[in-house]
Every structure is written in structure tokens, then in C-alpha cells.
Amino acid sequence: MEEEKFTKVEDALSKKQVGKEVNLRGWVYRHRVTKDVVFVLLRDSSGIIQCTFKKGDVPEDVYDKAEQLKIESSVKIKGVVREDKRAPGGFEIEGKDLEIVHLAERFPIGRDLSEEFLLDVRHLWIRSQKMINVLKIRSKVFESIHEYFRNKGFYLTHSPILTPGSAESGPDLFEVKFFDRKVYLTQTWQLYAETILPALEKIYTITPAFRAEKSRTIRHLAEYWTAEAEAAWYNLDDCIGLSEGLISYVCQKVGRECKKELKTLGRDPDYLMSIKAPFPKITYTEALKILEKDGMKVRWGKDLRTNEERQLMTHYDKPLVVSHYPKDIMAFYKPRDPNNPKVALCYDILSPEIGIEIVGGSERDLNIEEMKKALKKAGEDPKKYEFYFDTRRYGAVPHSGFGLGIERLIMWICKLDHIRDAIPFPRTFRRCNP
Image (cartoon, rainbow, N blue to C red):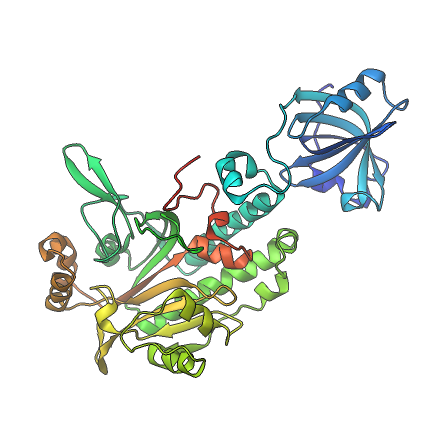
């Protein structure tokens, strides 16, 4: 087939194209041979369209090539667009010519295969319609996050992936050999972000993060992506408002611009469009009272687990802000509330439906001695944090920040059963391949 301008599948699926000859290229998504007709469902990144090759209507060599195709063969097809309500999308291509770019081997993925097998062949399963739609939405989520922060006057900055120690004095770290010494994969950019803050005042990042937690839940990844922000002069309410605005912005942009992909995944775009700040707000103590009424008694001072967060979210149809958690179970940099020293000036945002934390944030403690006490209590050596304490010694100002788990947000937006489908190649406690 001579080289001509190629049309994307989504552009061919149009009444404007009916009767016109188009050139398409892509991969065979489905293939069926009948007595006199070969049906080829052609896939490209924009969609799927049915192509037909009828015996007697096309040259014999073209029909023979159409017959021998296999799933995921790459092809170029020339044909005329016809309207056909029986075809996927309501249109089909009446094939005239066919060029096989590559004839695939027998594709190993069929029906009724286990989740583990699909994870083993993730490099091929990523071509499935489910994953294609998730990845398109994932791209839109990242685009939205950048837009939101830039529109707010935040500067994009980056911090090291390799760090000398922990930031949260608790979760396990991945150890890495760094020449002749040990370092660790980062859990958060926060400590470095706070050192950049006096230079730029409002900053954000989108970065991978790593936690060596041996968790087998539907919401945990060992390697994941996070959007984090730090802002000088922001108090707790300012920080909550910033993160509420981010979630709202992402949901509405995805709802507007990914309607087709969302509907394919079972998500109503109008629902996402309804997610607007401000969100309902309760304190940790109020959350315990709600849970107790539901028959789930939680001792004050204990963190909320997955089951408790899910139960709490049965009362809400939009994200919920839970604030003022007990100080003793919080990270060392979260300050005590001066009005109630038992709690910290911090918050989480929980998603509806799946009921998991998608944002965690707080004001940042300015009291070096308080932070040293918290670090020692957690078994950490405060000397490792001297560079961080310098931010309090030289021009300290009130400031706040938060982190958003991007895969958790995508999991909720796309109505996924497991977080591993929110990322192309999931890394979990039990899986680091392909």
C-alpha cells in the first residue's frame, strides 16, 4: 500500500466520513473468518473500528492476507467508511487493500484468565481496552495536577530519590547501595521541600515514592507516584483548601475531557463533575463518635484502619476531610494544636466509595526541641535531621503542605477494584516484574 495520510480510528467513526476512502493503521483487536467475509476489529490509540473484507469484492491476495491475520498483528488498511448500526461504534470500513506490517504469533491472552496470569503478562495486557482507558485518564490526571498548581502560582521543584534516612520515622525503607555506603529510596520530598520553601514560597512536585511495607491490600503499592505541595504562610485551613481545590480540579477536568473512557470503565462523568470544594469536614474525635454509632468502637488514640475508613465513608458521597488526629501517632513534624495539645494540626482526605485516604497534610512544626523529642520517641537519631532543623534556625515562617497519592486518586476516579490497575507496571510486596 503506497504511503498516504493516515486517519485515526476515532476520526473515521463519523457520519462526515461516510462514503470517503480512508487509510488506517493499527493492531488487530479481534479477528473472525466466515464463509465469504473476514471481520477485522482494528485498534489504534484512539479507538476500535470494524473492517470487512468480502470475497470477490477485493483481490484474492488481499482476502488471503485478511484470512491469515492473528490478534495483535500490525496492519495498514485502506477502505471506505460505511454506516452500520451492527458494528462497534456504528460505522465500519469496507476494506479495499491490506498491508501486513507484522504478522503476530498466537496471542497468549484469551478469556477467563486469572489475575495473576494477567499480571505475569502485564506487558501485553496493557493493550487491553480497560488498561488503555485507565492510562488515558492517568495522563489527564497528571496534566490536571500540573495545571492546577501552575495556575496557583506554584513552582515545580524536585528533590533527591536517594536519601540518607527516613522522613516519617515509621514505615520501612528500601535500602540501596550508594558507592561505599547505604542510602534509601525516598518516601517523600517533604524535608527537602521545606528547605526550598524560603527561596520560592509556593512549590509542588510530582514524583515517585517508595515504601517497603509488606502490605497485601488493594490500596498499597511499594512504588507509587505522589503529588506534593508546600506553601509558606499557609495555615491548616489554607492547606486543606489547597488540597480540596486540587481534587475538585482534577475530577472536573477528567469528567469533562475523558467522558468516553470513564463510561467504558463504568464511571458517570457527571458524578466527577459534581465533586466541588469545599468538602465536608469532621475531626478525628467526631469520626470515632460516628463509628461508635455504627457499632465500630475505636479507642481514642488509635489510628483509623481501612475497615473504619470505609465504614465512615458510607455516610458521604464526596471526599471527606478528617482533621486533628492524636499527636502521639503522627509524624514528628506535625505540630500540636495549641488549643488542644493532645491532637496535631493535621488532616487526611478520604475518598467516597472505596473509603481510603488519598491526601495527608499538616501544618509544619517550628519547634526544634518538640521535633527532637518525637524523633527520639520513635527511635530516630535527631542528628540526622540537622539540615532540616536549619530551616527553623534561619528565617522560619509558618507553613503547611500535603501529599496526594495519585494511584489512589485514579483508583477512585476509574472505579477500579485494585490499585495495581492504576499504574502501568505495579510494584507490590509480592511482585516486581515484568
